[in-house]
Image (tube, rainbow, N blue to C red; front, side):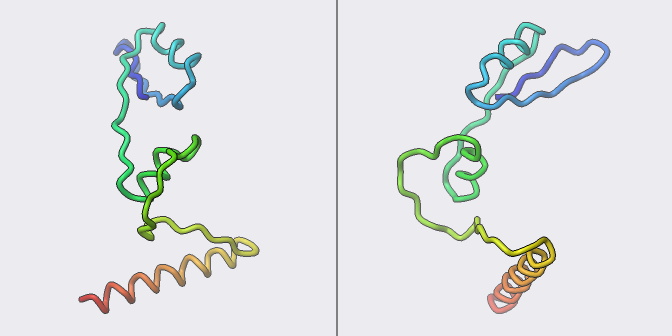
Amino acid sequence: MCLQLPRNKFEVFATVVSGDTRTATALRELGGEQSAAAVRINTSLDRLQNFLFTSTPDSVYPEDGMVQFFSAPGEGRECVEIARRIQHCAMLKLMDG
């Protein structure tokens, strides 16, 4: 949910987590305009963006490879692993033409 407060001396854009009625009510009382973004769940990235802090719907979705979770011991090793994945994706792109 997004709210836009009235244009006086300043403009404010606020996002409110779904279910946070206290904050949404407070912003509405300040004269904010409310709108909600459409929920898309076509890809694993869409699902991550829409349900990061909530429960995912009880449906089964095919794995599309757009989101990958991994763990590495330490930031340096994480950087190496990210670089390897970028190189792998670049190599696949080169082979596809």
